[in-house]
Image 1 (cartoon, rainbow, N blue to C red):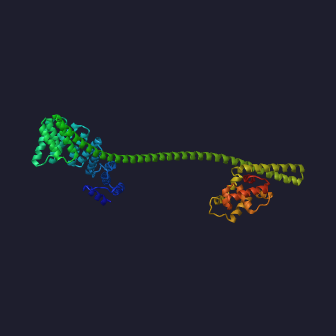
Image 2 (image 1 turned 30 degrees about the vertical axis):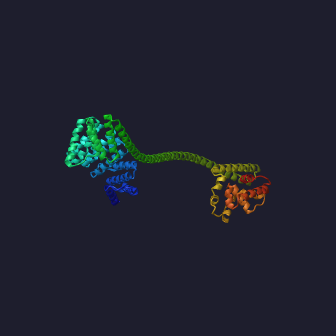
Image 3 (image 1 turned 120 degrees about the vertical axis):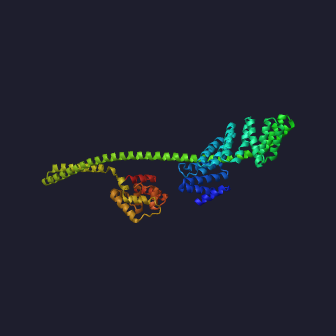
Length: 514
């Protein structure tokens, strides 16, 4: 991965077009988890360069920002030279989007990082390039200041040719402010430099000299330089400048025909340049729109995720509180119930002891043939038995007949079979179910057979109804369709109870058997 990073950086330094987003992303993912601060910064820088070459400037700016955040400026080995390039190229993207204030911030950071990297040329360039956003902001005094500072710094550190590159823009700034004398000083310096080094004037410099001669009212010289600008022009910007200068010149001379001619020419070139810039601006705007839309969607998803997380946390807290309260109430209830059962069991033991004592006395009375007392003791025994039965029911009140039925293993077995279509009910299962009914509801079989004879399948149907299984479950257990069950229940209602009614009446009568 380090080799791939090095290869991609080599392509970048060779000014090759970077379009392999997948490779750049894979490098970022790898070094974000395993790399050093410098490697992470370089990976995100190359991803930003890739986005810039692909025309995705908003994404590129994002990655430049991430790359600068990856830098560990507290470390001795921090790559300040790379940080310098990051801020320089961010500034260039802000210029493309005509955002001078942001461009100034990036150039300020470029200046600081270049100083830390001891990169003299870069920090001087940062000073010079500030003239561009200042010019966009119409702050011409600031333009003059930074270009003058850059000119002196280039001269001081031996970058002579680069220092003279500052002069045309500096001359224009002085002319805009109407300071013709200062402009003439720098024109003389620049002309001398051109002569000494055998250089040619550029179209834009010829335009600035035409403006200078317009400023000192030497209109013939101004005309020559505007025409020179037109002959040297290699782009629409220089052509428009030349036409504009000629328009202003002939306007000053009141040459109506020439004014109309160059005004029209200037308009045509300006119009062409406007549409070219508009297409470029639309491309930037579309890219920015797509990026902003993606950002908004990501923010919305993040917001939804946060809200869902908060809802989940609140739900968990509420659930824990409810569970805690339920546990406390259950423990209090169980304690009260246990105390009550202990009291009832104590009364039960007392009643049993009393009954045993009465039985002993009864035996004694039987031996002594006291008929009257014998009758009274028998009555007392019956009363005690009733009390015992009542107390037994009270003790077992938490386990009613229905509860006992559903708590049996065979009931749970049938409940499982009723929801699993691929499981079979065996003969032994039916046998255990009948035995359970005979144990838990000993009167059930007798009550049914006292009404009439039932075959085994009808008896099983009655048991399942008594155990409160649904018709769907009964159909699964008996492997019968709902139509059969309905018809059969109606038949049994007529046979056993001699009534003509709906099948639900039969179910109600069966469930009433205890």
